[in-house]
Image (cartoon, rainbow over all chains, first blue to last red; front, side, top):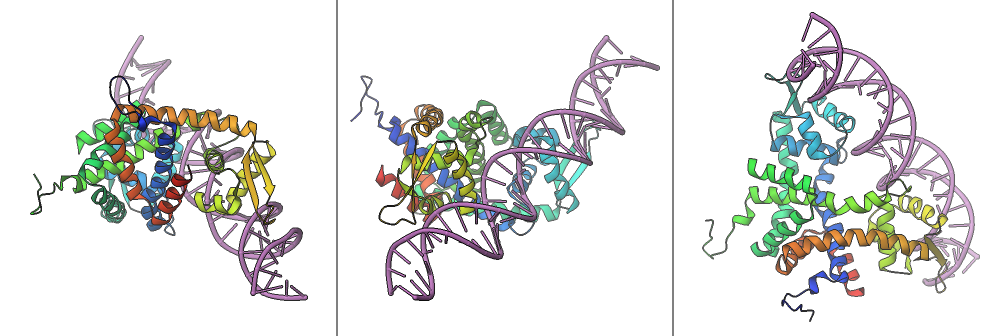
Length: 164
Length: 164
DNA sequence: TTGGAAAGTCAACAAGGCTGACGTAAATTC
DNA sequence: GAATTTACGTCAGCCTTGTTGACTTTCCAA
């Protein structure tokens, strides 16, 4: 057993353990996105649309630039996605009242319906995984993920957590 | 507190908790890929090359079709990546001796060097996250990720685990 | 010897990233 | 009041990485 003078078990820090964690992330992320991907395929949308819908739903009235910093893409990339969502009547874009340069984004009823479908599917998988692993494992899961984020992303994540 | 008659705490299964887990996966995966992405950018390779290199290193001598089933992409997509890696002298492709239709893939010394660089960076982040969260959290992390995989992916994952 | 599996190739296409350049309206600063 | 900055949108073009479809070559096995 790999014990330090301090007494901590360091077996979880071996390269072999780390590699297993890396591969677990790879395979699990595939599962994580599989259900929404399946729903979106063939309806002219993709993962990028899902992400936009998720975070607009999460923070109704958010501005374009706020969404940009959360998603970490260029405005051209986001705009392409946003435009189709607005054209298709899933997202509503409103000029800001206090600052008219800003656009505030909301899901329409139609947008809320799709969001529902997507998040139901994704939550179902997450729920099954949580249930199988148990509450203590879930706490650890969240701890490791949070520690894995870039500081800037952790800030975004925590800001969303508080808001909700 | 949400306690069932059985006594289990079900707070970790609320939609709110599940949503936090979903967002944690999203932000953490960004961090997870950030360092290799940075290394590969500007050297004509991308994430797909990293994945191929990782799994060839992981299972030296693996066949193309085995790699296909691990990566879950089409052979055309994998072939494009593989071709550049072979042309650039990072990967060696050998006709099978027992079955000459198969191609057995190995990293060259040059390929091993890049693999080293990529996995060092990715492991460093993972190690920091593991260290920050502690061994118990790491066990939970792995449990939840494993439960999140599609059964087929879990099979692939476990087969790799045993091998290593 | 022939059918079918494994591998590779070509062509075409789409999603979704990126950069650079440009335009407009509104807010802010000088 | 003029100049600058900010927020957003858009056009054009590029890259990576995924897809389908069609086709060939190789070669094992029934």
